[in-house]
Length: 308
Image (cartoon, rainbow, N blue to C red; front, side, top):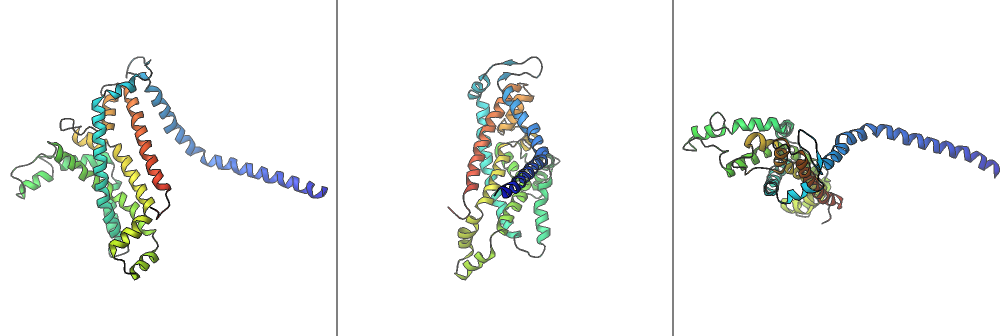
């Protein structure tokens, strides 16, 4: 017994040393990612939270004011109107994106002639940055030198060249069209991967049992794509809540400040009015809203697939 214990003790020690070495190697591998998160997320987040508690002008000394910035937000009707518009825009554009992306995903899911061409064509706008896409559509929507309004006039569809950005409804739906054109291809790819993960045997068994396309879509496709849909939804909602480029470049918040988004108002307060502390407080409020929305989406992600 003594000899067995004497042999096993060095072996156990070597095993523990090897496990400790592997842990340090693992930490070494993740260190760059941890450093990036700390430098570009944790530290800026802490600095923003600290700035939100100060009167922090662009020039000059800052002073601690506690929660005064947050109390001021409660009286800021422009911010709440911007938040209300952001919510309306988020709902409309998310529905529009899914209404376009889901049929496209169903169309390109199975191999067929020119499938690769279709997938590339539909996805191509997603590789363009939002700023570049906004500049492109700003030209397309120009009443004089653009494409849409002059083309409609030349084809006799309108009696005169119509400025699509002069009133709220045409301007809003023009932005919706641009975002759908830009983002639907990316959402399509996400949904396509979810569709391809569904076992073909289930679809075939349902067809043998006499289930039609709509019945199979409702009973098999949608339940088994719960997590994929939730992932696409959280990406769409988060991107919509943070919308800024298209409204700043194309509309400048117009017409008559009716398209001010939450991020646009934060930008205005921080870099136009130079109230950096107040802008930081607005940013923290928007962060809380995004975290709440993300928690709801993560709850959906945790639900088992195929379970209502």
